[in-house]
Length: 164
Image 1 (cartoon, rainbow, N blue to C red):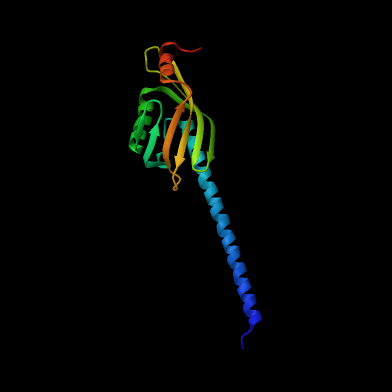
Image 2: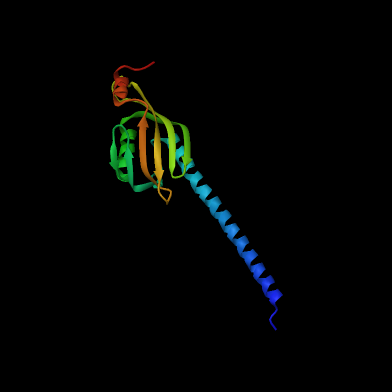
């Protein structure tokens, strides 16, 4: 004979079990998402500290868009070339990270890039500014735009009129 109460009880247990599983999965996915978000921030912090050596290019999409006051291009190979150019021709390049924050798919960094120019008197050069990085759904950087707090002329002047 059909036991209605037992059927309701077993269905209730299954629903509760299913609900617990769903909550556990949601908690796991939330934690995983948090770790992914923190990972890219930690990777960027490490990259800024090592700049321009051993950069983590795997966090960039193959068709990443880059723009600053000098360059404007698309593609990871060109981005790597630009970093290698800095590594090769700038003396003592250093990137100081002052702040980094993420809001949704955008990461904003505030920094100062400094180096010595390869001119015979090796003048110190410094550019402060910020970057806006846009992430795609795979958490890869698809856009990296740098903004400077000074003009290109100001940077050129530093080569001949060092600030004290």
